[in-house]
Image 1: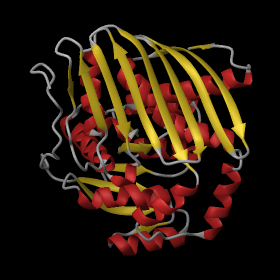
Image 2 (image 1 turned 180 degrees about the horizontal axis):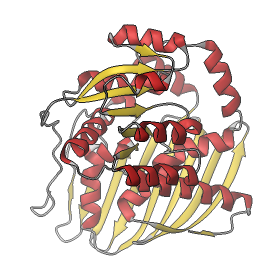
Image 3 (image 1 turned 180 degrees about the vertical axis):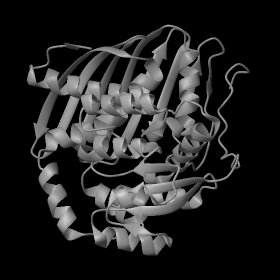
Image 4 (image 1 turned 90 degrees about the vertical axis):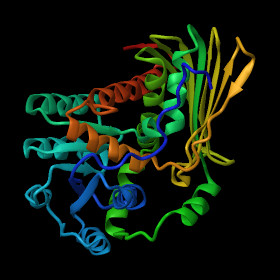
Length: 359
């Protein structure tokens, strides 16, 4: 590591003040496997109450974490909160997010920020009007390896090219999740209802996983001005491949759901003074991304090792600091809007047989 390329702080800072009083809206799978364990570990936030329209889920989670559980969002919003974490399906994000903002609360919302970029824009406008914070749950921004990579990319000079990939496994995913996830409360009626919305796999998978990839592109390379994409199918597997023009460089991307191998996520960026290579792991390993940086002048590689790091906990703590210090959230609501615009542009390019879509 060069002297002018300091690594980000990989430790979790002590709470700067009283724990942020937080309510959880949505007690489903992502809440149980990611957000609730992160809340339980953090000194910066305190879970005050949970809500879910399913009394099965709300009851199970409230008992497990010893907090009140409600079946109506309105009840939770009156529970003496400062902020909420919204972990419901994205078709509900705008309405519930705006409801929380109107109640005077700050909002950490799962990615994607909403069902459409227009709906995400409504959240952005409401937050600005009411002077409240909105942070979007693109948790990779809080991975210390990714933060190191961003600083390293800034030192590469002019960028020649970049490649991003996000590939989910088929068979191995179920066994991996079974080993890593805590016991889950399940409401079979909710699972059946959600399966109907997920039946349009092309829309659901691009929105769910594209939110990660496209936020990563913008985080490392800046705004995107054009997207070109195509979609290939192999039985039930869907593979998006495309290219982008960013404010710093051209980039290519691949989103695969699924591959018949293990999880693979990462990026490579090549500049006039070296290169950055990123390998990220299945998030529930809680393993910071591995990053290697080549410095052409010295002909040396640097590769910090951050060990285990929970990006879900780190994003919660960053959210709490932003609220306490009245600082911008990262990523903010505007980043959520832009990620959705890229998802929509990708889908539009696919429908147009790969023709470019300008943003």
